[in-house]
Length: 311
Image (cartoon, rainbow, N blue to C red):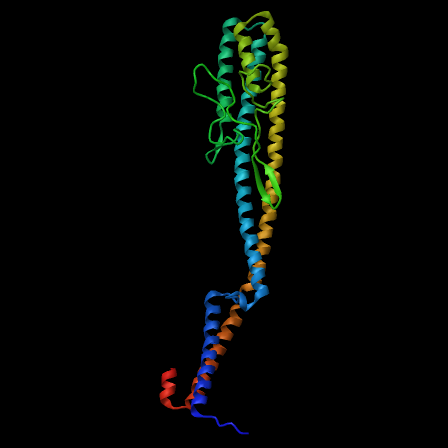
């Protein structure tokens, strides 16, 4: 049985074909303008899923890089403060040796004690170092300075806590970024007014007291116990600085790893959804040619009025 092709059928078929051709031109234009071949998930479901995963990895990677940058700044501030404390303790050792000398008179010892007191104040000031508005030696109580530097008479009590601050630098990988200064049983800086405290503030306060009292027993304490305690404090500061240096090295390694991971994820995302410019330009030109040819072809088989309408 034969089927009669009417003018209306031809017009409807032509209109459908022209709309399809126009849609292909529009898609090619969008690919050129966006430089993306996946404009919606249905274009490439598997590729779209890979792109989502790659973007998630890049977002997480960016946060890890931010954490590493902040942690490095935190650690560098810590090391600078500990370096200042180290220099102050070296000066305190010189003064203690001078004060323990029998040739040093009572007046000179009192003057040395005053300088030791100033060193205590400087140590507390160094321990109040902050990075980005956060006090690096305050534990997790980061909004309050760990040491009081304004009260008269002086208050050496530590005002922070001994909680750990950690930063994630990878999935399931965290690093401690704060140095604890009042952790029992051997606090690093400690509280100078706490009996039995072995921190350096207590050592410096003992030295000052022994210099001011000036008895024979005090002089012996300067020569033996105080100098040994000061050496121990210096060693502990050195160990703390070594720990900071090791952490910074670990952060540098993490930063390099994250940079490599970012490059890999970016390349994967580009390979998954980016278009080749030359191919996209060729596709656009081809689709435009096809569309224009379809318009010319349609003009020869339908009424001009319909062709005018379609244009």
